[in-house]
Length: 53
Image (tube, rainbow, N blue to C red):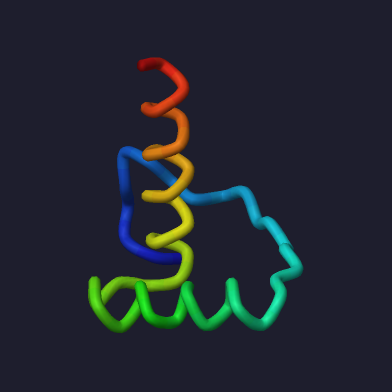
């Protein structure tokens, strides 16, 4: 087990990406210096926020 957290990440998700999207994800990972999972989480939050506008 990892460190205790107020926001556990206990849901696993498997996705399929085309080559271009995978390369873009890798570019984001490098530029932001975060994990792929974190880039995807941020993307979901951004899309959700855009829906609310």
